[in-house]
Image 1 (tube, rainbow over the protein chains, first blue to last red):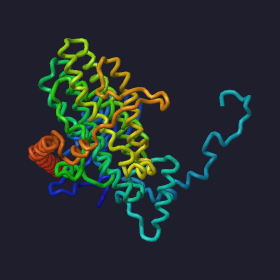
Image 2: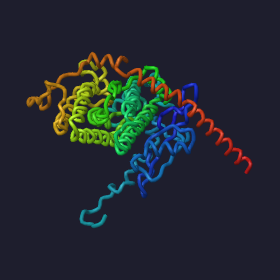
Image 3: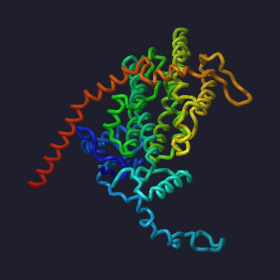
Image 4: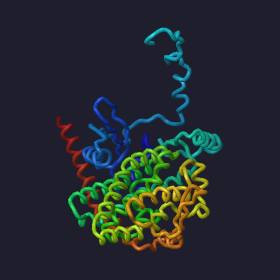
Length: 108
Length: 326
């Protein structure tokens, strides 16, 4: 069984193949990132956009929508979480709080 | 990539430990994390049942779309029924992350292997029912759903957050509809009362059987899937609803409903649990009609799904040809 980043199966087990699964990203307003809001099935990209509009933006939740087939998303594996993120764990000097600055120095 | 990964032989204990620790910290489980099979199965059952309820729930109210008394009321009802479809889709998406396909879910609904809320097996006999469903049925749903925003499975919680944001509109439009009727004629007031009399008991049943008869509750709460017991939520619903009924000017059909100072909540009569079991088993007033309607929509829509698939394939082929020619 293959699955996408979101875990869902890529194709149906039924006799007739399901419409592919798409992941939907919405930009809430200008100046913000597109954010993942959910997924839906559609026969093609155009239908995915229309369905995304109807399902995820019924109340002005967005000014722009991205849809991408779930199977096209490459994802890190939860099993490799520790080794994958280890390189950043021991680099505390990357955070501003690592550095002690006297309280009376302004605007720091 | 696999969906929910089976624990490899030998190291299963380590996986379970990691899962338990995540739950213990109050962190969310995400789709590609390892999870016990029982957790996955419980979630599939609960989320699917919830999704099916939203989809079947379109029918009782859809019954009044063409007979709404004004364009304003029709537009509101249409928006509400459309929301229910959206809620069903959010939940189906969440359920699919557990490794079950959308088509399987639909088929399990129409062949009776999965259930939906018993409330939708009651008919909507008068237009006042549209208001009562918004007020009592969606009110009960809100009581159930708000704590589920913190459920331990990430996709389910996220779906619940979206749904709860929209559910408030459902309850308020229903209550406002009833208020409008209560300001009308005696006949309209009687219609509201009659509708409330019919829906009160089924609304209480929406929280499920009493805790003593709900064997899965303890495990679901340990896993953080459920956050409150059925009886706790039912009590919360009654306490919320009593002042709303008073403001509306209707009587809740329970002569033993009264405030209990000692427990800081209302005492009330339990619904007829035999009736509940009958409806759950498929013998409610509308069970067969609801499923027959859903099955018909599914079967009649098959050619549309196939045509769209064929059109998409053809469009892709044309695009590939043009690329090849260029």
